[in-house]
Image (cartoon, rainbow, N blue to C red; front, top):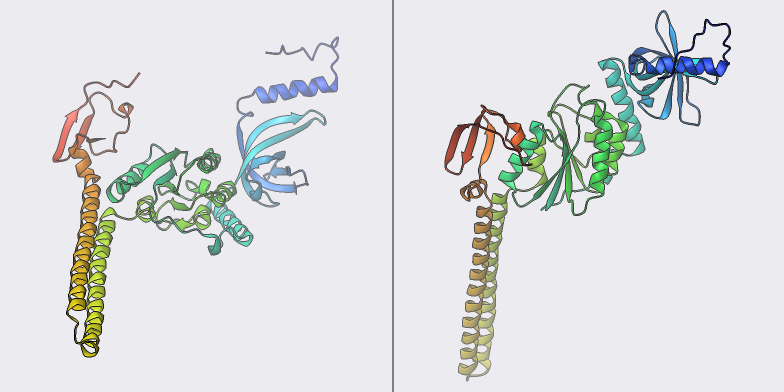
Length: 406
């Protein structure tokens, strides 16, 4: 640490730069001033071409010069007369000796201000075309790989896993973990979508989190997240909050789901519906073939009658026609049987992928008693009661020891 000089010693003379540097060091070494949050009213706001934001924060008794550089977050909330909450550090601009608050992020002060900021951003992005219905992409009918952007530890990912394993176990689910609440959430969500855009063979994505207050859901109302959703290379479903919650991400996404579980139902069909559709198509094919055979038989009978009228000796052609009809009926029967076999094989394959069949092969689902599904050995501790689901029932057991992999 730099030794503090004795300014009272008249034998030592300091330059202005040295004094300002000392003051700067004192300010930035103070843990309170190096990580401080201030609320106040904005005045003297300037936003030059450099992209930086210069303003004064004031209350009834004092004023504080402030600056937020162009890489700071929340510049859209800064305006003369706005009541804001600013986070940053107190330091000194040594070239002029100005004491300043160096801001890295700004938020409106109060729920009413948040709602106003939400409406202003919604109108601006709508005017830019980010919400246009013409750019909304349809979801793939049979997705092979589904990306889910959400917290890896919350109930949301478990809900989505449970729904997809029951409805459509044919798809592969790829979790891209991110925070979904707090100051770091918005940049992490943007990084997650950027990572998604670099992945191959992703067919569709779900951006999800559970319900919460307007402040809890605010990362999904930030402009950086809206533009990241807009730039996603695959169709995206926004499933943020409860049915009555709306975020900017909902308006930008290709499809909005009222809940994360609903998103899992929207993203893929149900295997039982697929099996019924295949069986229905096979029945329609059989009926169409039957109609075709009957129509051709009628035409042939008409032609044979004409042949009998014009040429008395029709026995040989008639026998040939009968042979052809017999072969046609045999071919149609074989085609229908082949299609039925295909349907039975598909039903068998789909049945083998059902949750109970998977459990019957020796797998089990383990969760804390009346709690979430365990995905890691570190989620339990000795003495915890576990509920083990097998294909033919459930077991309650107690953890004796936890041995994570080395």
